[in-house]
Length: 87
Image (cartoon, rainbow, N blue to C red; front, side):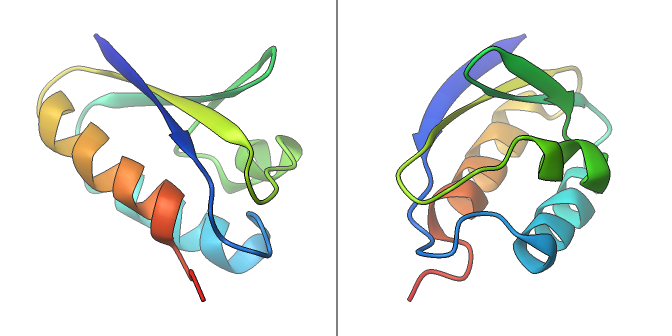
């Protein structure tokens, strides 16, 4: 298992549209992905769970990735967390 912390840059944070894009990308990997903000840890493959984190601009979010392709997954998903819909 590997983990890394990223800062969300999207001025709108993570609302429904960027969450959908993120969750779809997570689904392309066979590994387990958890997203952590503060003391809340959720399954990165669940849109509803992701929305409960209330991710806003400049929030620090940690990805925990475990399984096959974890290196590739953390790289691509981290890029999405920091740059998705960046204006």
